[in-house]
Structures are given as C-alpha cells and as structure tokens.
Amino acid sequence: DSGVTQTPKHLITATGQRVTLRCSPRSGDLSVYWYQQSLDQGLQFLIQYYNGEERAKGNILERFSAQQFPDLHSELNLSSLELGDSALYFCASSAGASGNEQFFGPGTRLTVL
Amino acid sequence: GDSVTQMEGPVTLSEEAFLTINCTYTATGYPSLFWYVQYPGEGLQLLLKATKADDKGSNKGFEATYRKETTSFHLEKGSVQVSDSAVYFCALTDQAGTALIFGKGTTLSVSS
Image 1 (cartoon, rainbow over the protein chains, first blue to last red):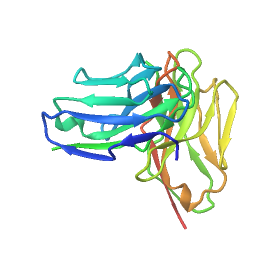
Image 2: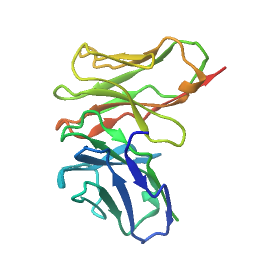
Image 3: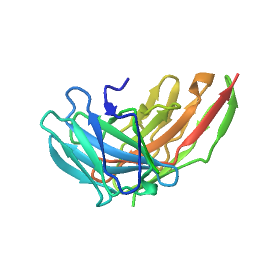
C-alpha cells in the first residue's frame, strides 16, 4: 500500500458526460501528479500540482482540468467524454516539487460507452 | 524530446532463471532513472532508482546500473520467482525534473 488513495475504483459513463476523479496523497506529500494509462498511448503525464498551485503540464486535453485543494487532495475533471478517454487514470504523490520518487495510487478505471 | 525504449515482451521464464529487461533512454541533461512494477490489477510500485551516472539501484534482488555512456538502465535479477510475474516499466524524469516519462512496459511471466 503506497498511502495514495483514489476514488472511485471503477467508473462507467456515456459519451458527452462529465466525471470527477479524486486523489488523496500520502500524508505529508505536497505534490500530486495525474497520469493516463491507455493501450495505445501507454503511460502519459497529464498535470502536476504542488501545494495547491499548478506546477507542470503534460499532454492534458483542454476538456480535462484538475485542482488541488487546501487539504492537498486533488480532483481531475474530465468533460465531454469520448470513447478514446477510456483508460486507467493514476494519481501519484511526492514529498517535494521534484519528480523523484513518486508514489502511485491504485488507479481509477474509466470506461466511456 | 526525452524518451525511453524498452525491450518488447512478453518475456517468459522458468523459476530460478536469470532475468534481463533492456532499457535505453534519450535525454538532454542528467535525468534520474527508475524501474516501476505493476502487478495485475494494481498501481505502479517503485522498484528501484538511480539518480546519477554509475549509480546502482537495487531492491528485492533486482538491480540496475545507470550507464551514461550507453544511455542504458537494464534491469537484472539472478533468480526469478513466480511472484515476480508483472509488467515492468522503465522511466526517467523529464527535463524539468518533475514528470516521469515511461517506456511501454515489458510483461514478465514466470512459470514453476
């Protein structure tokens, strides 16, 4: 158990809908990262928040957004969902702003029908 | 841009066999290098890491050495067990030192 929690574990929704994925980092960690794992693209970095502020952005679509709250938990919002958004979404956390030693949560499996 | 190339799988071995999973990288600067493991139905677990050239990361019998001259970080284990069956990902930190860039993963299957 990495100490990073993610909810829900599974999510099934329809095209065009909006969903929110939630992540709680390990106790004391200030950074949260979001990654998408799909069969065709592999594991891709989406976005990083550090102590409530956006710090780095990767291949995140404009339909996707994230935020980190004062208690350091983070939410990833996915809107206008398409079939191709079906994937495993992982959250990771680290103590500082640097990406060294990220601890991953169990993931949320999103299925868009 | 920075990238990681891993050997294609699946790799199928008998218990107690020697394991090598090749990983090479392309990067500007001096990234940190990692091996992560993903067991079926679970998230990624950090297996080992190395932060500078010639560093050797090791954990649970697995080892990898950061080779700058060959831009490689091959994963090795002397004697695999059935419980080592999983997907192994090689990764590096990006130029900003924040995000991880992953290889496509190598599936290892060990039979008794």
